[in-house]
Length: 149
Image (tube, rainbow, N blue to C red; front, side):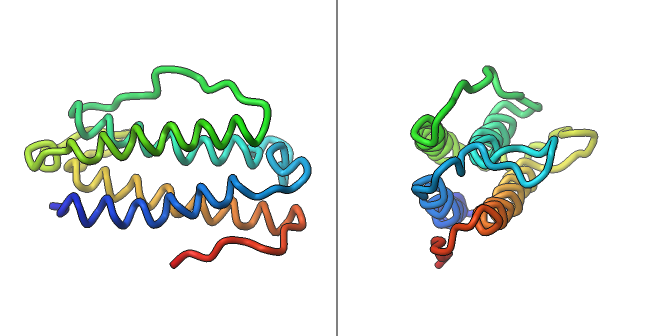
């Protein structure tokens, strides 16, 4: 089981880097895709932020809870605003997770895991995709990137 304050602190350290990655001021980075069919930089940033909220909702509700709406965005400013909104929402959700919710076994994408395992998957998912954002930025020519500390 997770000690939630410690987990939230760890998650926030990673999320702060996501915020820095969407603060990069590079021409057309928001639409950059390294390959056809891949998510753009903006799509990937929103995916990271929205799916962590989805994982948290799933743990709280005790069953898979898909996102309730599709995000509309066009600019990096839109992406920043969505990432900020999802961060605030996810922070509140994580703070409300109970020990009982952490222990409940949930079926999630064909697998079962206790809530705390789902939350760990959420953080792993966020870290994985954040690494992709670093790669996207480098491929797009960004030379100064935030450092995770």
